[in-house]
Length: 306
Image (tube, rainbow, N blue to C red; front, side, top):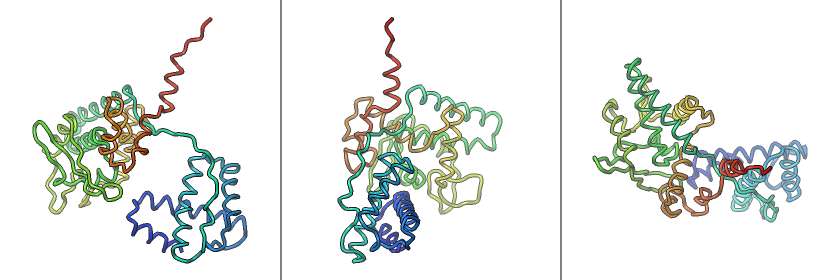
């Protein structure tokens, strides 16, 4: 049953991350259903009462936040709607189940002080590599250039590793990268600022020519003939983050930072959405919502009057 649902999601061109999320949420519910009812899971066995109980279980027992519960039920809705379309059930048992009121959450982004610390850590790492580790220097230049691109374009992780040489346009005064297969298979072109252009030029000057490999960011320390893996990029970003005192740093935080920097500099939400590849302005509005960091800074400015 899950295999057929997975095939359906794949045909709908859902991203790998979305697909994994749906299947994980579905398996969690199926495991709970079998534990709770001592009955093998099947879509026709699920009732609205089961789903109400599951919502209470997630809230009271698992202590999940409203946003997490909402995500789980969104996945279940997709599954049961699919089951209806496949004539496995007549109606969606999740339809009409009231959701727990969600709080507005904002993503994590880097403030100016944290961005300064990150850039300094990256520059220091590159300088040391040039002086002491000439054999490793090319790899460190690749890492420096790649993270600079992430911070200055807002590319998603998958978009970054799939970037090819033919997707880049570079000149002395302008440049851009073409995202050929963004989320939802949408294309967009992102202009490059001076920092991004220089970072790319510095890397491309020393990037080895590998027959049949046109990916911009390639592996140097192995015989792998392809793009960098997602895990490798995450590890590179995390290493820079640790050097900068930012242990939770990830490619997605760099994407959020790019977006927040645009909003803080007066760029309209329509333009931010276009640069990020968002389908809806509602998704982009999170960058005008105060973050926990913003609220903490606001409260810290209060002075107790004696």
